[in-house]
Image 1: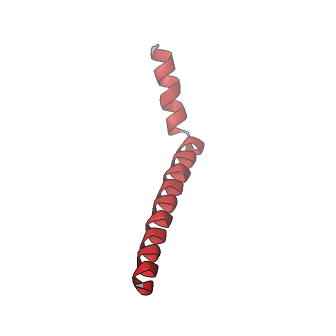
Image 2: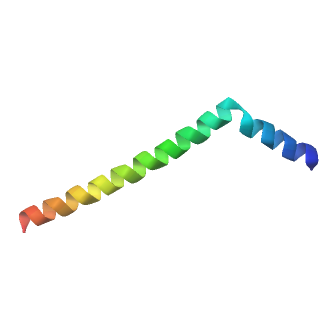
Image 3: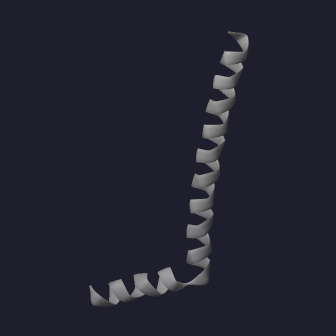
Length: 50
């Protein structure tokens, strides 16, 4: 069990693992931002019609 935890920690400190985590976070931020922009432009479009 202890050796397993140590292996996970060393994997987490690995630059490649950190890069994957950073890419995942960036992807989530981009998707969220894209949804917000779409919602805002949709609201603006509806107000323009009315």
